[in-house]
Length: 476
Image 1 (cartoon, rainbow, N blue to C red):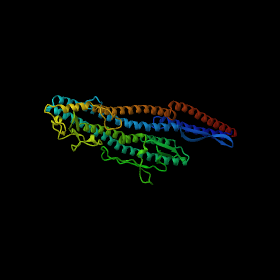
Image 2: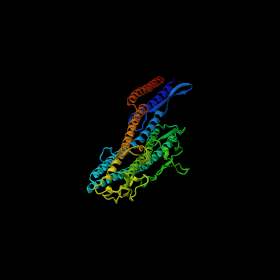
Image 3: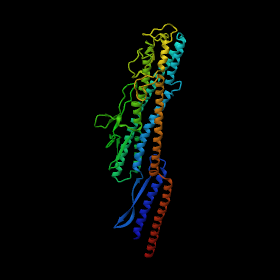
Image 4: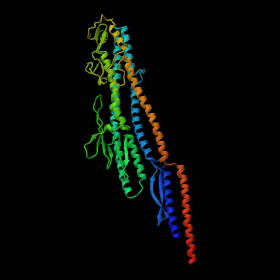
């Protein structure tokens, strides 16, 4: 090797080592930055005339386990869906209380039964009659308040879908913009590692909102699809649109999430969300809260039906204790809990005499009707079928308690699922960080080695310079 070859080789070694030191330093400086992955300075041997010569510095690349990264994203979608559902159901459980709580619907039903027991003892006493009316009004108020709470949570879920759609559009636009930068740098043969880190941060944020699938094209651009293969980013990003409802009531229609890709008419993709925050909000708005409303409506409807016409021995007494806003006992359960009330024309004596039917009280002290109502409380009967509740054989109190327990059990079930899935995500995330993140000890050890290599190349240059000086001096 000539002295000039030695100079060239040593110089390339210095440049390569300096570049590697720069990368290691950046790794250390950015170790705690969200989404930053360990960078690697690739090097190769430049071959001239079949002989190894100078060191060639390649592009800076990332150290990322792509499959593990996808697993983390998928698990994040699952966790975020469960998180939002568990939050809403926990709040709903607080509204419903426990069956034994004095504020729960189940307790209000029991209080009404106790009021009728007192009335049966003193059917002619106005105080006992007023206590029954007050207990019935408390029960009706509890039902309408719960209905309002359910619809308020539905309305909140509907509004938050709009917020999530805004977040999705922001992520899509940023990914699309980074795609363009990455594609341009790839064309010029420049490193895109840092840009890919930034893009991954936005892809992660997107995966928290919805389940997605991705694949990288040959030019470095990332294509993004929904879980059911609707393109969100191909050559350009699509736009999602959503209009929250002005008001949400039992049975009211709500809007779909629409996809506008710029060349087809906007179309609904609400069913495309199977995981992520949006999926959780849609499930709450369209399934879980409507089910709670159906169960509440069923309880309110059964109360109205049971206190409509009461069997007293071989006769029947019309009472119409619970009605809708028009003082009419409803013929269907849908939405009834939102308007249930105690009949506004109810008089205290009605509780003893009824307002019609074939039953006739024998006098002011006749307790036949209150006693028949107490028997009705204690009799198991069939209720209107509704998902999650025993409709075949329950007393009114049991049906109310089962309704409250269902909400508590459902909230506990989702909490358990969330805890389990969070543990899985934590394990996957830890593995990803271990494989793709920066290990400070390794980087510091690498810096020591690189400094030694830099010093070795510098000594070669110094030796060559000394040899050249001696050669020139001998010529002189």
